[in-house]
Length: 319
Image (spheres, helix red, strand yellow):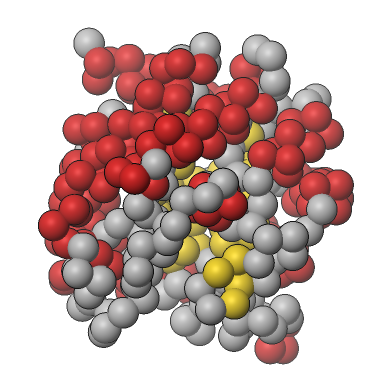
């Protein structure tokens, strides 16, 4: 019965997208729990809240749901085995990922919005040591996605995909779970530079965006998002996607300064300014809209209010 409910919930959302509606997702979670006082894990960023401060993490998810988000992403961006192992935290791998999803599910169940989806967030990112091989990455992601599926995730959200080969390894691993897999790539030149060389969008590791889209076109990924990318670079990415991607498109951009593994509080774009960017993005066909690191509930509240006409009835506050 639980699997039927999960499938029905996901299918209902996909019907909205196929019908041309827009869906609001959440804002930054890792940076938001840190802003609320949760310390980072040494060498593994902000994945520890599920075990050390579960009530704060659930409150963050609940706040986004109450504001109108209809997809919340588990705070598991930095809890891959390839991330935890170099930091000496591998023993917590199963628990970080299971509890990360369970807390998001609990927030959904308490929210009064049973049709909201919980996405299991997975990345190939790492902070310490050498990057995993593609084979190791695929196996790690397969294990992580299976834990998330069993904990109640409705779909897997691959995040900060920064190279074509790693993206495909993650996709294969995540798809083995049997859950739908959405892909979020991060685009941009070197950290701190906010324009593309010759105006050509690339992923963080230098692969051309058009090549990433061509590779994903060979998969069954239903939604591709530009995420954890500076707001100033999104439009150029969307212009490429308009020509080379014929399925649903999402955007959840980041904003602010990141220094010594810390997002600087107060350095992010104001919600109203983020909304002005988002208005252009929606005009370019974006159907899944949220925000990422450095942003928070104020940004999602502004998007929900500003674009209430474009969002489905179930995605507006108070529904």
